Amino acid sequence: MESRADQIARETRCLQSFQLKADAIGHLILNTDLPWIDVAIQIEQLRELALRLWPNKAWLFDLIYGSRFERLWKQWRDVG
Image (cartoon, helix red, strand yellow):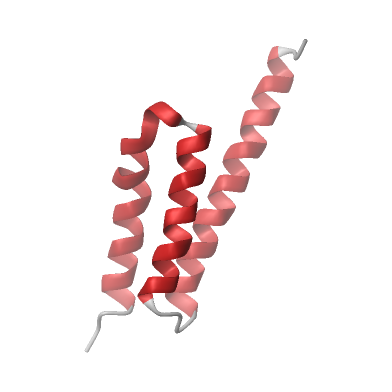
């Protein structure tokens, strides 16, 4: 049986891995010339991962990450 400390450590690793993937998408938006469709595919893959990890919190992904990625795109890519 997994101890409470092990559960916390596992959840922490899971969150860190998820955040690294989100940071990578932000990097794609800010530092590459990848078209939106390719970035959107990465966002959708991250959304699917979030749904697998936290099935009852789907709305949180769009609230936090969806709006963040859209804001980054508009701020850094939709200039001109």
